[in-house]
Length: 207
Image (cartoon, rainbow, N blue to C red; front, side):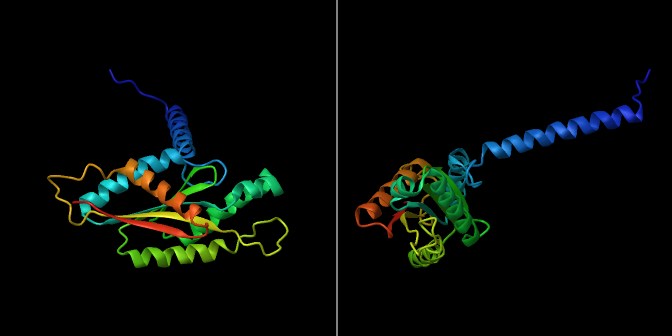
């Protein structure tokens, strides 16, 4: 004996299912986004960087990881308040999002630190050229709330990793998402130490 369900009941159940699925999708998306800036958060970054390293390794291509943060951000907060500091971070995320390519990944690492991932970039020169574009765009953000011409500056730590010559049967285990982030962070620190508003770059070759 067949069990039948009235059409209106089926429609209601289907709508409930679709609504619940949509809620789950929204919550999943929100869990991977930074609440302040709307870009990817640290959790999303960790997952995507692992994926990008694996893809670059499989394709035997290059990958660029860039960590950057706002110069003298504590002074901005202390002088103009945390609300203005938050606005600076939102503007920075917006400007970088508009400047990057659709396939590039932008995430907020924490505080005033952000990370960019450029898949399949080709050369050191291209990386420097890209940074000049970002610096020019970011300089349009005013450091103070008074529009008094105080340009915002950032410092960069950049790692270019090349998997083109790696032996697929004997992968370089020292190169992974964690080690690349640690190196980018160290390079960012070097940029800060050398006077800020600059880029420090390292090139790694997987063998």
